[in-house]
Image (tube, rainbow, N blue to C red; front, side):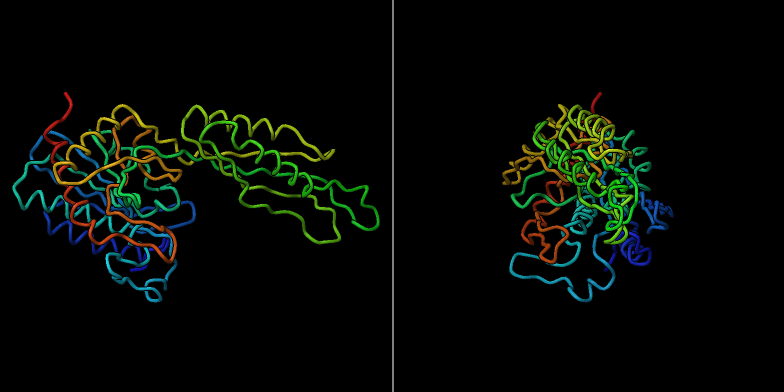
Amino acid sequence: MDSGTGSVEGVNRVVDHCAEWLRTDGWSVDRHAVEGPSGPLGDLVVAEQDGGAPGTTLLIGHTDTVFPDGTAAARPMKIDGDRILGPGVCDMKGGLVSGILAVEALRSTDTAFGRVIFILNPDEEVGSPASRRFIVERASTADTVFVLEAARASGAVVTARKGITDARMELMGRAAHSGVEPEKGRSAVLEAAHATIEIHALNGRWDGTTFNVGVIDGGTRVNVVPERAALTIEIRSTTEASLKAAEEQLARLADRSVVPDVTRTLEMSREHDPMERSDGTAALFEQARSIAGHLGLTLEEAATGGASDANTTAGMGVPTLDGLGPVGGDDHSPAEWIERSSLVPRTALLAALIGSVGATKPE
């Protein structure tokens, strides 16, 4: 099913399917109409089930993908040996399936587990602007959070992710005829070029911190000294301290200019706080690794530069593990896949984790 972010009909088809499955398995299901900065989104789902044990686990998965309508028809799901391929199988419909089946397994074996809250988010691929408040509210009552993004291709779960700050730098100069009187002009595009070099020169200043000028826009016609230009910039960093330092340095660059009489102005927006490997997350990983060993699995951990809803919950101080879906890779590409043989063991691991959290609720 196509379910690109903002495709309300497509996302809601996926939501309909998941909501019916959840209700059949004994979950209470609440659907919420939500709207993002660009307009209406598919519904957000908050499902709950209580297995009788004292702990509370929050599961987070997302129903949106990056693919436009028509992709599923052009490139339908298929099985090729041990790989399941198709748009969104890895990011992250495989995780939705694992989340539902894990609790179904606990119920079918009469295994006690705590209260489980499952958020199905319709806008994760654009940073969860509408979903974040639901996530924060439910995470504040949870002992642990499991995010059902795919495991790394190596099978590792994710214990750290970079934070992200987006920025836009506007450059204003003075227009003039480029042939008749260019000396009267002040080129905003030339200033943008200098600013781009300065920004990229910051790469490597702080460990794990990157700067990228991803989009440059400026000028109107080839015979006009450009009056205006703009840079769209992204900063990613592994720690709050380094991300804050990088933001401050970018702001300082905006206070200077190279081309006389051209001004720079900057707007910044923190999209995700870093998911740092806290003591609570480290302890949760050790618990997961022990369970994996009993299942005959070897479990490793990894850090990644991509962000997810785990950044939000980890930033609140709630022990969070990400990458608990099936093993997969090549997200956001035509080659996207999950490993068929990983579905059962990864779902078993998730089920055992949910059960163990209920049995070991902190005092």
